[in-house]
Amino acid sequence: MVDPIILIVEDDAALLASLAWSFEVEGFHVRPYRDSESLLAEQALPEHGCMIIDYRLPALNGLELLERLRGRGCHLPALLITTPAPGVVREARAAGVPLVEKPLVGGVLLKEVRSLLN
Image 1 (tube, rainbow, N blue to C red):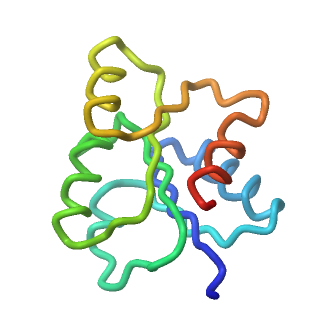
Image 2 (tube, rainbow, N blue to C red):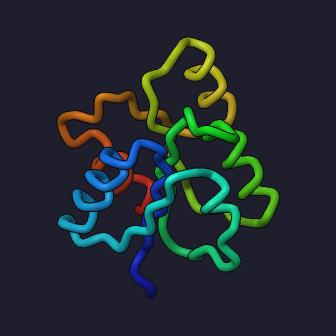
């Protein structure tokens, strides 16, 4: 089986670099993206892995990005990261997408990613 790849979409450059480094240290292959357009421009997305998507992105929000990816046939499991407002929590729940709240502390994100990959 091919090693899973984690796609991370986060517009905060420092947080993106930190997340990528953290997951690489844990032995994961990571593809970082600064915005939704960069990920949407990818011609071939991996078949094995998961996505970590910030909800608040410049052009599309994380759920809109996920909807576009699903429309293209990408069915990797995904989770949102954000400082949630009540509406965001409801939207994520309705879409069946787990949400991890920022600040990302205590290994919760790593635990959720491992859960998505199993």
